[in-house]
Each structure stands twice: as C-alpha cells, then as structure tokens.
Image 1 (cartoon, rainbow, N blue to C red):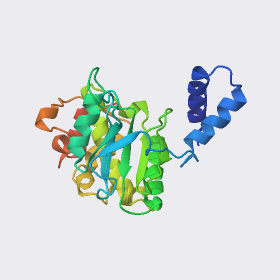
Image 2: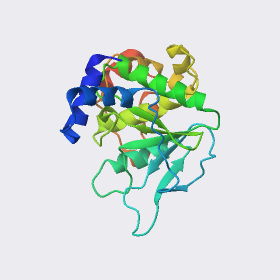
Image 3: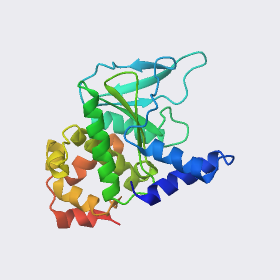
Length: 238
C-alpha cells in the first residue's frame, strides 16, 4: 500500500472525527483500505432488491437515494453495463434518485471471485497513481460485494462519465484475474476491441475530449471500438 494513499484516507477520517489521534486515523485508514476490510456490510435490514441477488455473474447494483417514507431502501440490479452506467451517471446530478457514492458487484461464484475483482481494481488504481482509492466490503450475501468508489470514477462531465464506463468494464475483467493483469484485461471481448484506448487510459490520459450522449448509449465501447492507439490518444488527454 502506497503511503500517500494511507495519508489521504487518514486525513479524510480525521476531518470527519477530529477527536481521533493521528495514530488512530492511520490505523483506521489501513484497515479501510485493506482487501477486504473485516467490516461486513449488512443489507438485510435496510435494503430491498429490484432484481435478484442470485443474478448472473457480472451484474451491477446501485442504491436508490430517496426511498418513499416508510419504504425500505432498494438496490436496483442490472446485468447490462449500459443500464447500470446510466443510473450511476444520473445519480451524480442533483435531484436524481440513485446514489453514486458506492455500487455493488454480483457474482454467481464464490468469495474468491470478489477478492480477485477487488485486487484487479486496486492494481488499476495503483497504475493510475490515485491517492483516493476505492474500498471493498463483503456483504452477508456470498455473491455480492459493496464498492465505495474513488472520486476519480465519479462525475457528470463527459470525461468523468466515460470513466464509470471503463470502471464497469474493468469489474468484468477482474473476474478473470489470477495475478496476470494483462491476461485479465484481455479476457473480456469489449476490452479486447478497445485495447489501444485502454492502454492510453492506463498510461494516465483519462480525460475524454469527445461528447458523451447517454440517450444514444455512447459509452466507452461505442467511442473507442477498433480505434488504433494514436486515434484514441486524440480523444484522451492527461
């Protein structure tokens, strides 16, 4: 774990609770950034589901932000990346009904899959030299992982909305991560057909200069499918 990542998380903890000592903040930051922390996110008492926790591997979930009075909070589950991305992005705008601070990733297999996905995302964020890292929690459902996203992946401007499209793709790649990052990246067809652009993105050029019209489903694959690296580099800058 890079020291600057723990420093960043430690400062955020201190900002929310200034009665904690620096050592207490540091230890709590290390715990929160581990894969996985020992905190189990309990979904039973406060969450209902639109969809099923037994959904097929690679499904995504997002919380509704404002449940009706007396209603339980609902996790909306989609297997389609584009539907999930649309909900996530509308959640980044004021007044919409989805909470973009965290999401859920579902697998029909064991907890080992969740750990592989978490390690793959962490390696991606380290490659990008992010200070603010995503955090991962198991839930009481063996096939559901909660992800508290780094601010890097969130936002409504075109360059930021493109990032959540990359993030959802990387989650799918992480299912096949066994220590070889490139092999996992090449395990998903949508990643393969956009590999030159992914190489540009992972080099640190993560700001998208094109337009991103979600009603036309213009996501990562739509914009970068079968483009070479030099063309992709004209659409992605540092």
